[in-house]
Picture 1 (cartoon, rainbow, N blue to C red):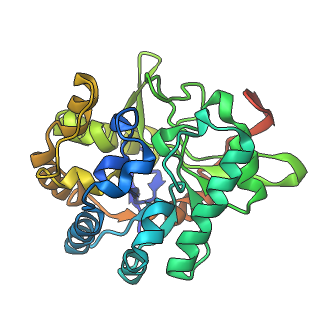
Picture 2: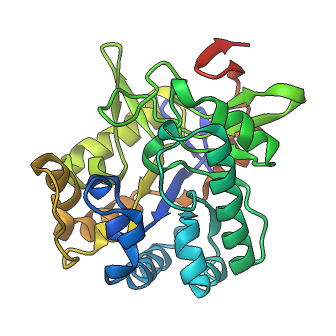
Length: 310
């Protein structure tokens, strides 16, 4: 493990990097306009865009976790193998990109198992990590953490400790922690980077935030977390964010703004970010944090919708 010291002399692991592998028409911005049964009518760009991501990461010497949609793995199994062969971790991003907070437990388990089967069949490796579409494990859907534990997942990366109109769990810890589940099982949680300002958690270093907000803000956020709080950052993005020529889809003004804003700038911003330090997959980040004693918080999932300290 290569580490860097913060200003206080604390050893801090490298930042974690993750990619949510989905096509442009899978995005939540268009979920109300594009029924899932019509997905096959749209030209797919996910293979080309993901290979572009692989090229950028190889150029920078970075490694990442690729949370692959089961739907994509089923149609493009060679893409899963290409990700693995490039030295990256492959994890699960659901099968049909449905928000967990809109599902019943039985539906979630079925979707989860279907996704894991497709991804493991494609790549031949056990899947250890999960990220819900649109960070949709929230207070009312904590039952999903119990199911992840029952299904043998090591970690989850679905809890975003912010306030947002579509997602968010502002009372959750901001850094990696462990969920304590029934039967002595547990699941580690790896939240995306946030900064705490005047008692409010602000999002940083991911997806639309990386693409839309000024680059100085992303640099400031990652440096603040590392130097002031002695923690690594966790960055995420999507392959479609590197594709300014993707077809334009119908949607509300807000949805289109979130999805299309600054697409031509994303590749350059990603290159700049990757030059700022070393980036590793989330499984590696978790191992580093555990070895350095940086996963000290434990929370008990006592019943659906209820979060209580252990």
